Image 1: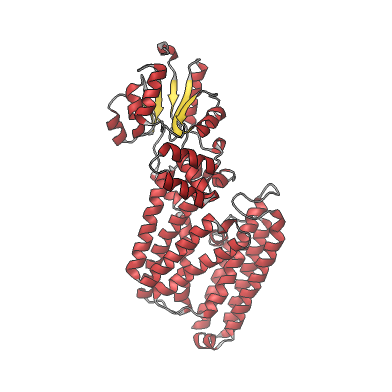
Image 2: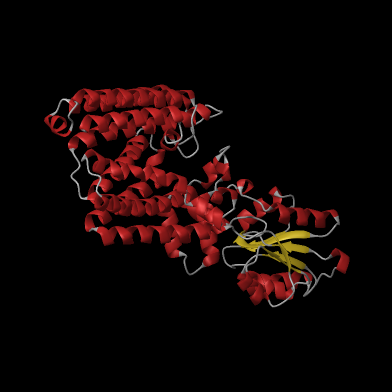
Length: 471
């Protein structure tokens, strides 16, 4: 047994949730799910009773780049200070040894570490026993973050806890040094992307197209918006978890809650599940039809997140379909019939905006390589522009033909004002495509459109003309 003086006691640090502001098993699960869903699910099913083997198999499938994982700066600083005092600093982690070895080297701790090996899951008492066997009881300091570390803290000399909650502190049962801050509620809420809920005003389109403004109809649409907002947030969380590696390479998206480590992956998974159940529940309380649409939206969105977003051209058609489903949901929620004219108009509009979204991303790309997690490179910009223009022309053509239809002549007293509204829509689409081509907007064209003063002026002008034409 090795013994160390009190001044030179080794400092042992856990990896998941401690040195790292994330958990490598869950990182591997989501990376593997995105890379090879069938292999990921198979590994999970056959190794659920053997956690050490599960971690090993997930690590093999995921091919995780540990150098991109978020490190807690305050923990790393404490470890480096210990090394500067010539103390031994090692990682002792329940994660698979292949990942811990790479992590130990990346943070400058060398080849000395303890980890799970496919047979032994090095957590709790197993980790405590391994450390006592190597250093002796009460002859090392330990930094951890969870209930699994309680057994180790009991055999350590100094116990250091990272962002513990009151429940964990009560269970530790000894004096501990606390570093770091717990997850903030506002970061969890930020993971829901509440600013994206504004897109769900699209559910009002069928009600407005039917010239209805009664309170009952409005309340029913708001019901649908609540269901769609919860469903969308659930999918955003799943999408962010699947996109962790790509987001960390992005100059803006690396600040997202899960990519940055501000919110644990486990919290995201629980939140996403809860939001999904809530969305389906309130949709079902409304009607079976709205429940079916919300379910279809979630299934299609999951398919998009797992596979379709990587398929060139298919992804923009899927985006257009997802936006169109919002309008269909508004029709079902309000109990109004959605006209074929409206469907024929909005799908190409959203197809054009999907192209704009990709044009913006490519315009901001710094290399000629394929975008991480996407199927496009800068060489595709010309084709995207052509599709956007074609879709926009198609949408305006449908709008123009509608203005001469019998339905429009019944609903609108001044068809010429309806046609002027179409001009406003055409100018707005042209502006969006031009800005997208130039890369002069946020990454989400819908959110940009609702914040752009000139674009809003065009939308309001079109809306006023539509209203006046109907009076």
